[in-house]
Length: 253
Ligand SMILES: C[S@@+](CC[C@H](N)C(=O)[O-])C[C@H]1O[C@@H](n2cnc3c(N)ncnc32)[C@H](O)[C@@H]1O
Image 1 (cartoon, rainbow, N blue to C red):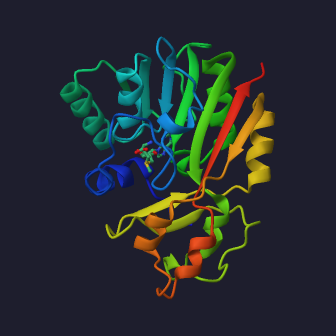
Image 2 (image 1 turned 60 degrees about the vertical axis):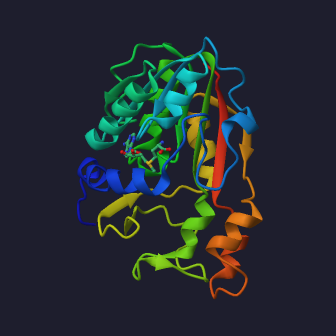
């Protein structure tokens, strides 16, 4: 597998990502088709809580937490994503600390410094997930909450990595844990992401000292599916695949 520097890759796609998704800052989100945190309420009332966002990208979720009265910080390896986050926080007039770094090393933050660790659609880019989960447990208070979303692992089966495109048949085994290599949307920038089965995620959480509280697989709204895969589209049976999984876990240490 050719080496891809993921910081460089995210620096290259950051402007495209921010333009394409134009993520709002009034609520934290869990992914393109998932209900917002303001609806799901998986974090409870965040006012007065200390929240660290891992893989914060352009900072929208951290900014939403700060707007709702939390003390928020975000960490991400990409300078371009962090530049966007800092500009957005300044525009919105909220104080959020944005730090450059990766999930596998949260050494900038002290032990037990946070009530909640949150992450949206970033953990699939983390190469050493067991190390990242151990770091999340370390920086969380005992009984603190870890809430994160990512591409549903079943979805990885319906991407043909040789063709670099979605497929109607399961082109990749659900049980194949090798890294995935693909180009990011229409940017031509190569990326790695990492596949773990749901069972592997649950085991990794347990091994890092977390107790799983909930696992959510939100169904996308029909209106969104009609736009992307209308019934007369040859790929329309991809409507049947869950796009997102959300984990809610508690630091059992
Ligand atoms: C799909 S974006 C999501 C960003 C943000 N959470 C959002 O919802 O827009 C994935 C982010 O993960 C970050 N990332 C990549 N590798 C990472 C790592 N090892 N640790 C933490 N974040 C990482 C990328 O820089 C990128 O900003």
